[in-house]
Amino acid sequence: MSIDKKYDVAVIGAGPAGMMAAISAGKSGANVVLIEKNQSAGKKLLLTGGGRCNLANAEFDLRKLIANYGKSGTFLFHSFSEFGPKEVMEFFNGLGIKTKLENNGRMFPKSDKAQDVLNVLIKWLDESDVETMYDSKVVDIEKENGEIAKIVLGNGDNIVAKNYVIATGGKSYSGTGSTGDGYEWAAVLGHKINELSPELAPIKVQEAWIKDLAGISLKRAQISILQNNKKMVSVCGELLFTHFGVSGPAILNISGDIGKLLKNGPVEILLDLLSRTEFAVLEKMILAEFTKNPNRILKNCLNDFVPEGLALAVANVVGINPSKTVNDITKEERRHLVSAMKNFKLAVAGLLSIESGMITGGGVELSEIDHKTMRSKIVSNLFFAGEIVNVHGPTGGFNLLQCWSTGMLAGKSAANRKPLTKYNKCD
Image (cartoon, rainbow, N blue to C red; front, top):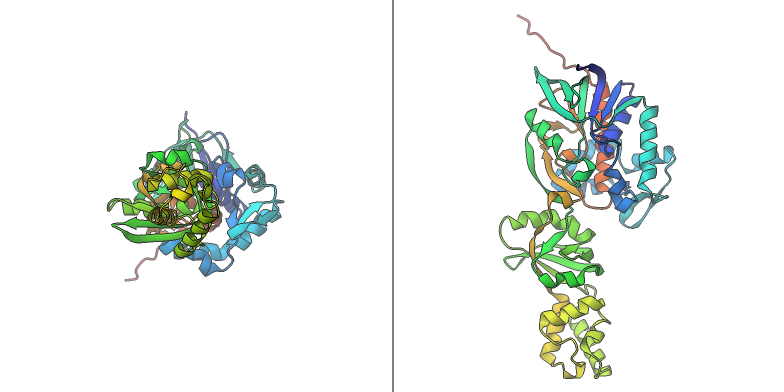
């Protein structure tokens, strides 16, 4: 027999955005329920920052912060104005989570433990009088007269609320519960869903020998993305070779661009393995090394310039026996070696699946959401928060920051939302 349970605000999804929305609504005085299909909250949160939880990015200049989110960044202007990096830091400090800043403004808990962050959020949910319903899957959302009338759980119970927040995340890491349910509900309720794609995803390449480079990293590689021999994207940063291709922060941040380019034809990655050394300078350095040690084996000599496994790959790409002594290397071969180090080319085979991306690109159309409240412009008692909306940032804490910020705004707005006023025309 089904049971009707009534609340002021019902939040679906106990990830970072959902927990923050529930806390915000609860602190605003609303009677709140947080519904999660997993048996516990924050499963994906525990994976962030390699288990250390990159809480946010400490870019305190609002305009510079927004620029990290591309053309869609202006949508976040209001939410960041109310709850940006400074407020996030103060919020967690106030809960007893001391924070620290690392390179590029990345904010972490001093303990380096995502579990500590989750623990204080769960405690704060309780102190905000939020009712949590775990192991509760939403199977249907019913709409009447332009509003959500109720949501139906897998056990047959109905959740009836004045307002609802969908904060179900994307489709990445489905084992954490992010299976894209929220997109389906939003579409059924009348929202446009922009095409979903893997974002911050590793790249597969066609070269089979790439597996021999797995584990090798470059702290500062110049990375150019080519299509039809034209440079389309160029960045400099950390890169990691994997058994299937390339990953690392610099690659992850441009993976979305690579995915879009692939729709128009083949794409190549061009790596400058020694970005701080000009071609002519590198050529002189190698010549000097060859002259100084004429009987040295080539691969051992190249190890002075690039990592060992990569030195072997450079020699093989050029087609020179890596065991050859440098005294036997011709001037032309030497130039080819320098060229290979400055223009190390890989053919892109594709991106890993949406599940493998750190976040999911696409999502609920921004023009259908009020950026000042996170309220749907289509369903009057519906709000959105977090990754489900079509705005995303690079690695470095930007996406968790977006979750905290939009979650805080959505929860507060849902708790304080007043029914739309209807005016009758006077005759």
